[in-house]
Length: 101
Image 1 (cartoon, rainbow, N blue to C red):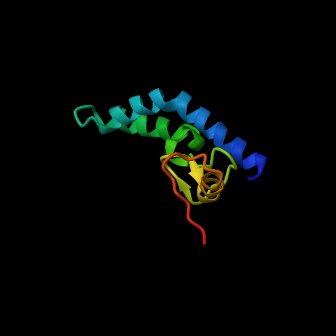
Image 2 (cartoon, rainbow, N blue to C red):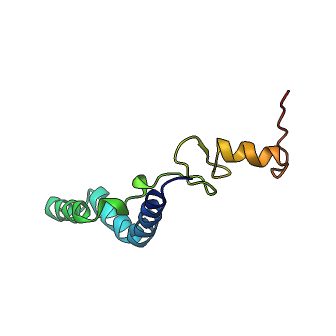
């Protein structure tokens, strides 16, 4: 099991990113619009830089839903390789045939 603080930090990042997504998108649209004056686009860049870094979606880490493990996760199932192996051994993953000899 991962450290509880690491899992909670990632959850906080998810919440912040969800709340700040509309504002970030609006500022990025202003920055990308070449028809606007340079001063207005630069002001939008500064406002975007002032926002918390944890409100960016790139800061969110993919973690295992069961164990919280941060490495070697499958995006489709949101489980780590270890959790997939355990569930596969118990026959709880449909379509997964785990062989061991």
